[in-house]
Amino acid sequence: MKAMANLLFEARMLKDIPRSGFHFLGSGGESVAEHSFIATFIGYVLSQIVPEADALKLLNMCLVHDLTEARTGDLNYVQKKYISIDESRAVADLIKELPFGKAMAGLIEEFNSAETLEAQLAHDADQLALILELKFLRDAGNNGPEAWLPHVVDRLRTSVGQSLAKQILNTGSDEWWFEDKFR
Image (cartoon, rainbow, N blue to C red; front, side, top):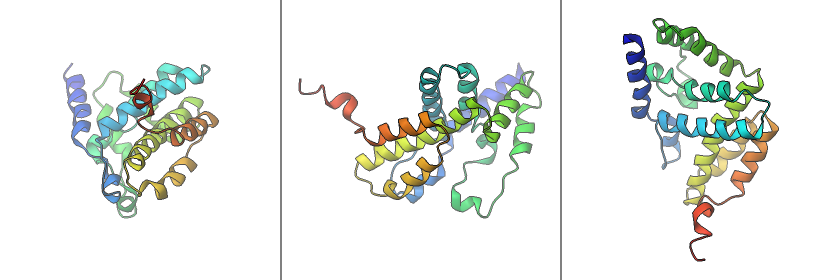
């Protein structure tokens, strides 16, 4: 139980670690935990659209895909040009006392290899979370996302991810509540 309590405190740390790329936009921001939540929720949506995917594996993968950032921090693209992270070591240290550690390491490894359907959908959920946030910032008047969005969309690996991204980009971020406001 001690190892699991430590894991929970480590996961809780993600609430305090900011995603570092937003500094370049001049607005917006989220913690790694906030990002992980929306990526996992998007994974849930994708699991409903793609019933042949193993939904539990997909959701678990989305949930743990950035867990090592509690140890390594979230590096943006500029930082990654100068700093390399030993993610394998971070994963090994993360799981060493956990009875389910090998399963967690397997999920992270599968996500990083992006060879299975679930890993590709989890990867797309990760990118769609960023697309959603960038679209929200663009709708709020920040012009920075215009340059970023094509590059993020190009990283999508599945046709369902590409279709969902297209719909996100063609939907106002306030449409879900605004269209009923004056009825």
